[in-house]
Length: 560
Image 1 (tube, rainbow, N blue to C red):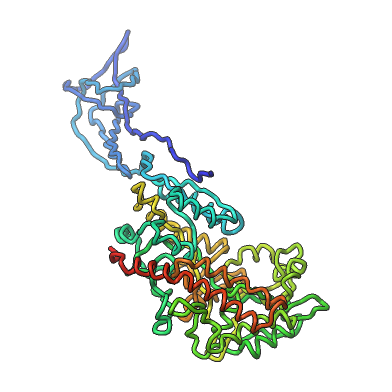
Image 2: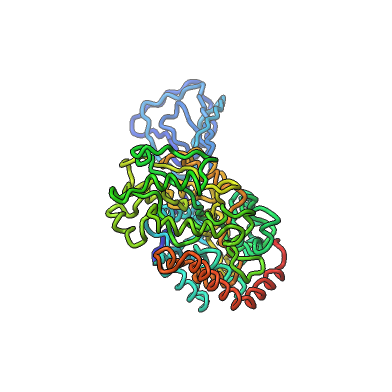
C-alpha cells in the first residue's frame, strides 16, 4: 500500500513580536550636561531603538497579512550624553525623560505568517490501476496536488493490477472495499442496487464548485436509469451534463473512438488526405485503405479489432438507415445493432482483414516490432484512437508526421462515435465511516480544472471537463489536429455501452470476443448469428434481475 501524502504535518505557530528598549545610565565620572530640561517621566516600551535621539516605535498586528505601525518621535530638546549604554530590556522600563512633541508616521509592510497545519478530518482509501505510463503520471501528479490543496484530507493510494475488477468485486462482497475506486459503468450498475455504493448528490448540492453542466456525462455511468429505452426519442444526453438523478461518483477520464493518420505514409504513396464530408466507408475510405495496403512492403490501410466499440460498432450504426439501433434493444432481451443495415458495417469490418487492408490478428505483434503497435512502427496509414494518445506520442516521437482526421461516413453523415467514461466512485464504506462529504470534495478535485488539465497534458485519456477540452492547450499538438476531439465529443448521436444493466459485464463478455469470422473460422453470417445468440441468451437469463434493478432505481428518492 502506497501513501501519496504525509498523514501528519508538523509545524508551529509563528509568533511575532518586537522587544527591547534602551535605557540611559551614568556611571563613574560621566558628566551629564542638560539645557533647560524639566524632568518628567518616560515610558519606553518594547521598541528596537539604538539611540535615544530618535525613537522608532513599531506596532505589529498579526493577521494573515500584518500591518506594522511605525511611530517616529523626534525630541526637540536634546539630552546630551557623553556615553550611551544599550541595555536590552524584555519588559517595559520606566525612565524619566521629556517628550515635548510627538510625530506619528504609519508604515505598512507585509509580514508572512506560517499557518498552523489544518487538522486531518478524513483518511480516504483510493484504489485504481493508473500506476504507470501517461495515466499513472497524471494520477501521481493529482495525488501530490490534492495533498497540497486539501491538507485536511489524507489519501491512501492502493495501486491495482490487471485483475483489478475481480479483486474489487471480492472486496465489495466482503464489505472491505476502499472509500473511492476508479471503475466503469458496467461494474457500477452490477453493484449499486446491492448496496455497494453511496449517493453523493446531496453532498454535491452543498458544494460551491458543483455545476452539473460543466462535464460531459455519458449516461448510466455516474448515475442510473437514464438511457435504457427511449434512444429514438431524444439524442444521447452526454452534452447536457448531470443532474436530476441519483449520482454516485464523478467523471475522471473519457474515451471516444476516432481516427489518426500517418501523413508521411499517405504522402509517400500519393494518397490525398481525406476531406470531411467526403470519406464514405463504402467509397473514399475503402479506396484509401486499399491504396495504402501493400503486403510486399509491409504497409496496411488500417487496423481492425473484434471488439465492437473500437471500430465495427460505429461502422454498423453509420450504415443503418435510421441510426436508432444500438447494441441492446429497448426490451432488454435482444441484440439490435445488426438491424436496419447495420449488418453491412460488420461485414466491412470482417472483410478488412480477409481482403488484406488490415493485418491478420496473429501478425500484429510482428508488425509492431519494438514500437509497441503497427501505427507507431510507421506501417499503417490509419489507426483508431480511444482518446489516449500519450503512449503513441512517446513511441512515434519525430519519426513521421501524424495527426487526427475525419472518420468514416455513411449516407447520414459521419459514423457515430462510441463515447464512454471511467469515473471515481464513492462506495458505501465512506457512508459507514461518515466521510461522504470529504470523499465528494476529493472527487470534485479529481474532476476539477487542475487534475483534468493535467490529464490533457499527459494525454493518456480524455479529460471530461468541458473547459479543458475547449482550451487552446488541449487543441495544440502533438498530435496535429488534436482539436478534433472536441468536435467528436460535442456530437449528439453517440452510441454507448448501454451500461444500465445489472449484468452488463456478463452480457458484454458474451459477444465482445467476435474473433471467429475475423480469423476465418466462421462466415460473416455465421459470426453475426453467433453474436446474436450468445447476447440474447444472457439477456433472457438475466431479465428478472434487470427488472428488480429497474424497480430499485424507480424507488430511489429524488436528488437533494
